Length: 237
Image (cartoon, rainbow, N blue to C red; front, side, top):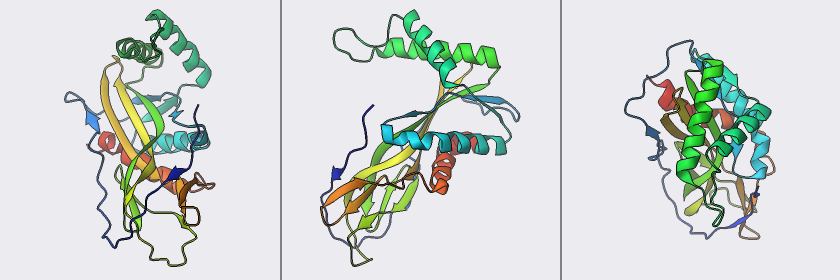
């Protein structure tokens, strides 16, 4: 698995008003989706991460998803990693593999088929109404003034080496987000959402580079905000 690496960031000094955060335009909800009844069981697959550094946030992500879904009146179960790995390997073998042997590229039809079968299987065994596949991912964020905006979130930029607290800059960076893909017990896709969590980089003005934050997952409120944003299309009835 790859790791977060520092990014070069071009700087433009400007005084700009902060943008109003909006939910991401690439959120998707199937037209036929119906919200689960109160008390329905939602099964969570083991969260996946885009980089090694994000593994430290997996426990917090699971806790927040469980807490917020339970508070909304749902029952929540989490499939353990060993069971998931075993079932997933079996479903991949059943479709003849999900990667092209010659190019290494993902065979998307086979991947979708294997994932659908996995969802059907675990739903049948657990009686889950909805299966959720959580991710921690890096997503584009727009820098404007002293803040960055992405996936319904706005966070103040992290800067070191700035003697003036009114430092402003424009451009783009990467924000950390919760990504959720949800499936009906039939295996059909019903929803894909994202919610901004935090900015994983701190701008070092002495080196003009973005450095990975050492305190990335020490503030649990950030993860709670991201989970809330990602769940909002599901929980807003």
